[in-house]
Image (cartoon, rainbow, N blue to C red; front, side, top):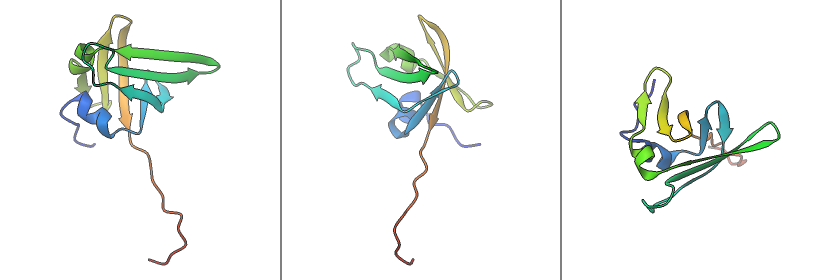
Length: 97
């Protein structure tokens, strides 16, 4: 298991993709205005578009669960599980190392 980031904001700053409630989402935006939604996430659920928005206070209050390696966000729409994922990067150059 990896060591968790100290806050969800820190984890989001380095995330390439998210998993929210079991759906993978690479379309997400982390805002800097504390008066507007802090985190917006968009994912496809079959042919349906799903959208989540979390306020600054909801993001700040998120708790990390080491067993599932996920963050729990509690919003007006209910409780949501969020995993921050990093993309794999491969080098496709033909140069010899």
